[in-house]
Image 1: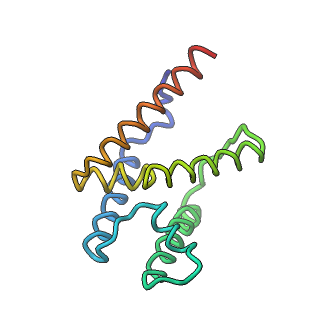
Image 2: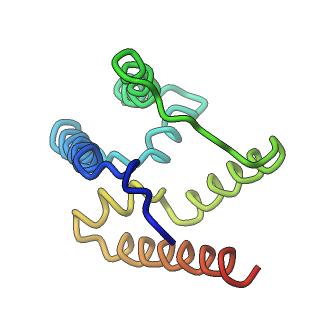
Image 3: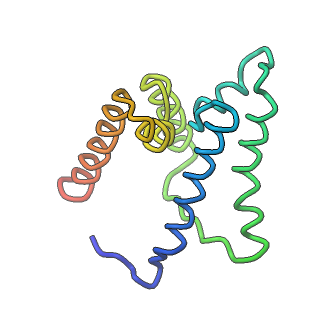
Length: 143
């Protein structure tokens, strides 16, 4: 594996990570809720609107609006997806199933759970990181 240093942006990455941490901190301290995306989205999809519907909708709207706002000031990176619609739909369903099975998504466990010193989040984070490493190794070196 090599790094394309022309595309490597450590300062932008650091700033992005800091903004993610800030949003997680503001959500937990301001609302008493965890900023895990699967939980936020799951709360929006309930058949009866919950008391937290407004902040959940605002959070998801911010996730959608942020790249659009970025695109006003700078060119968005070119996205290249080398998969068909069937593979993308299957992948989305598997991620959703995994999030439910793991009681949260990677952002919820990795960012919010680890910062709260949650043992469950530590195990979940180690599991999905190890799975990612193993999958990458198999795809890159064995297949």
